[in-house]
Length: 282
Image 1 (cartoon, rainbow, N blue to C red):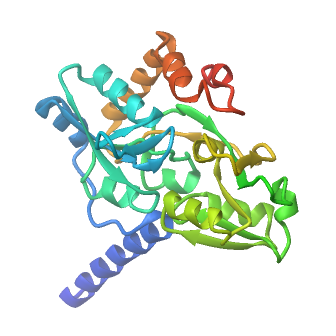
Image 2 (cartoon, rainbow, N blue to C red):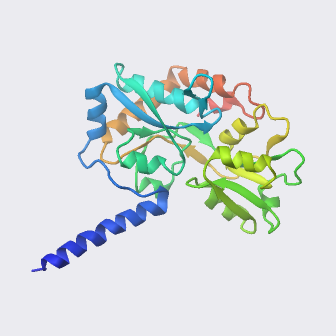
Image 3 (cartoon, rainbow, N blue to C red):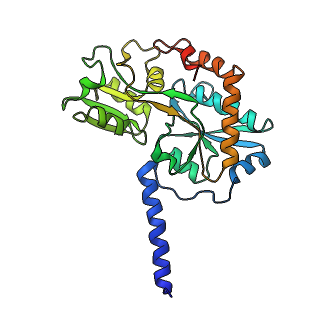
């Protein structure tokens, strides 16, 4: 029989292992629902669904300073998905970042995440994803005067590439341009400011995000096409199969009834370089 000390130490070590694993993905996990379908049942009982969305990503999730409201493709998708899961439910939005979205989800601060979040094997170990709702791909944003035209040209010690902590972009750019110096910043607003100030030669992340940054700019442009595939999914706590099923059905309905095409045209129809009709075939 194990001593009480051994049992306690084993529990502490096990908890530490879980925390370290979560920290290696996207932040420290403090809490996660353990009751099956707890999130889904709460949404249906309270008639409320709280979504984690970006507030610094034009076209996808951005805080409108004039209205004080979050707006973008992800924000509209959250509203439409909620309507189809529970027509009575009120939609709440909580602003998150790439680094805080998983911890906030697992801590129970939000019910689901729709925030330019790529579906990856590592993330699937921690959260469950819906089917893909947006086909993105990583690219680069540079000043129009830049000598860099694609990711291959950035593969030099002289190149300084900006990215956002907590995103997959940092690991990907290191694979495609291992010689470049990669600088991880807190959020997209900070990264964009740094690029404009000449503190980096290029900013890399998903093309949908970069096109939003370049929209209306006379000095910035997206170059080189995409060099990865980054399908976005809705992230949810594990042990919620009913919610995953409901979200997947909602996404199917949104695509089949024409709502998806309308939203794609609304947010990307006037963006130079983006083909909203092709996107609507997602």
